[in-house]
Length: 107
Image 1 (cartoon, rainbow, N blue to C red):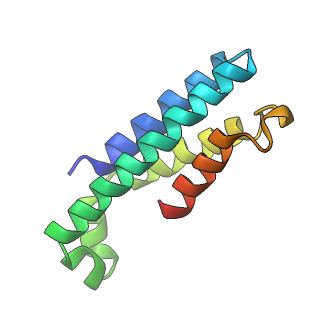
Image 2 (tube, rainbow, N blue to C red):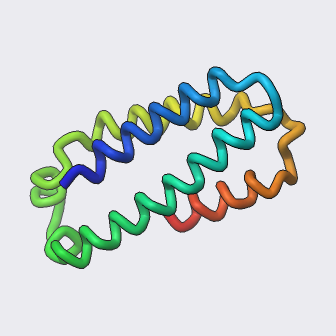
Protein backbone atom coordinates (compact mmCIF):
# COMPACT_ATOMS: atom_id res chain seq x y z
CA UNK A 1 0.00 0.00 0.00
CA UNK A 2 1.63 3.20 -1.16
CA UNK A 3 -1.11 5.54 0.03
CA UNK A 4 0.98 7.43 2.58
CA UNK A 5 4.01 7.59 0.32
CA UNK A 6 1.80 9.06 -2.40
CA UNK A 7 0.29 11.54 0.08
CA UNK A 8 3.74 12.52 1.36
CA UNK A 9 5.02 13.07 -2.19
CA UNK A 10 1.91 15.12 -3.03
CA UNK A 11 2.42 17.37 -0.01
CA UNK A 12 6.12 17.86 -0.79
CA UNK A 13 5.52 18.60 -4.49
CA UNK A 14 2.79 21.12 -3.70
CA UNK A 15 4.97 22.83 -1.10
CA UNK A 16 7.73 23.26 -3.71
CA UNK A 17 5.20 24.55 -6.23
CA UNK A 18 3.91 27.11 -3.72
CA UNK A 19 7.45 28.19 -2.80
CA UNK A 20 8.19 28.88 -6.48
CA UNK A 21 4.92 30.71 -7.15
CA UNK A 22 5.26 34.44 -7.77
CA UNK A 23 1.96 35.43 -9.39
CA UNK A 24 -1.68 34.93 -8.43
CA UNK A 25 -2.07 32.59 -11.40
CA UNK A 26 0.86 30.42 -10.28
CA UNK A 27 -0.61 30.18 -6.76
CA UNK A 28 -4.00 29.25 -8.18
CA UNK A 29 -2.40 26.61 -10.41
CA UNK A 30 -0.52 25.07 -7.45
CA UNK A 31 -3.65 25.05 -5.28
CA UNK A 32 -5.69 23.58 -8.11
CA UNK A 33 -3.16 20.77 -8.50
CA UNK A 34 -3.36 20.10 -4.76
CA UNK A 35 -7.17 19.97 -4.80
CA UNK A 36 -7.14 17.50 -7.69
CA UNK A 37 -4.52 15.32 -6.00
CA UNK A 38 -6.48 15.32 -2.72
CA UNK A 39 -9.58 14.05 -4.52
CA UNK A 40 -7.49 11.28 -6.14
CA UNK A 41 -5.94 10.38 -2.78
CA UNK A 42 -9.37 10.27 -1.15
CA UNK A 43 -10.54 7.80 -3.79
CA UNK A 44 -7.42 5.70 -3.27
CA UNK A 45 -7.99 5.73 0.52
CA UNK A 46 -11.60 4.57 0.07
CA UNK A 47 -10.44 1.79 -2.22
CA UNK A 48 -7.88 0.63 0.37
CA UNK A 49 -10.49 0.64 3.14
CA UNK A 50 -12.82 -1.47 0.98
CA UNK A 51 -10.05 -3.97 0.29
CA UNK A 52 -8.85 -4.05 3.90
CA UNK A 53 -11.86 -3.32 6.15
CA UNK A 54 -9.88 -4.62 9.13
CA UNK A 55 -7.90 -1.36 9.11
CA UNK A 56 -10.97 0.42 10.47
CA UNK A 57 -12.13 -2.30 12.84
CA UNK A 58 -8.90 -2.90 14.78
CA UNK A 59 -6.66 -0.73 16.89
CA UNK A 60 -3.32 0.91 16.10
CA UNK A 61 -1.28 -2.28 15.68
CA UNK A 62 -2.72 -3.04 12.25
CA UNK A 63 -2.79 0.61 11.25
CA UNK A 64 0.95 0.88 11.80
CA UNK A 65 1.54 -2.40 9.98
CA UNK A 66 -0.11 -0.92 6.91
CA UNK A 67 1.17 2.63 7.36
CA UNK A 68 4.76 2.54 8.60
CA UNK A 69 5.54 6.01 7.22
CA UNK A 70 2.68 7.87 8.88
CA UNK A 71 5.10 10.14 10.80
CA UNK A 72 6.88 11.22 7.61
CA UNK A 73 3.53 11.91 5.96
CA UNK A 74 2.34 13.98 8.93
CA UNK A 75 5.56 16.01 8.82
CA UNK A 76 5.12 16.63 5.07
CA UNK A 77 1.51 17.72 5.66
CA UNK A 78 2.48 20.16 8.43
CA UNK A 79 5.22 21.63 6.20
CA UNK A 80 2.65 22.06 3.44
CA UNK A 81 0.24 23.76 5.86
CA UNK A 82 2.99 26.22 6.84
CA UNK A 83 3.49 26.99 3.15
CA UNK A 84 -0.28 27.38 2.62
CA UNK A 85 -0.31 30.04 5.36
CA UNK A 86 1.94 32.15 3.12
CA UNK A 87 -0.52 32.17 0.20
CA UNK A 88 -1.40 35.80 -0.63
CA UNK A 89 -4.62 37.17 0.85
CA UNK A 90 -5.62 38.34 -2.63
CA UNK A 91 -6.64 34.74 -3.37
CA UNK A 92 -9.47 34.90 -0.81
CA UNK A 93 -12.74 34.11 -2.51
CA UNK A 94 -10.96 32.48 -5.44
CA UNK A 95 -12.87 29.50 -6.90
CA UNK A 96 -9.73 27.36 -6.63
CA UNK A 97 -9.54 28.11 -2.90
CA UNK A 98 -13.14 26.97 -2.46
CA UNK A 99 -12.31 23.81 -4.43
CA UNK A 100 -9.31 23.21 -2.15
CA UNK A 101 -11.38 23.70 1.03
CA UNK A 102 -13.89 21.15 -0.26
CA UNK A 103 -11.07 18.70 -1.09
CA UNK A 104 -9.54 19.01 2.39
CA UNK A 105 -12.95 18.68 4.05
CA UNK A 106 -13.63 15.44 2.17
CA UNK A 107 -10.12 14.09 2.62
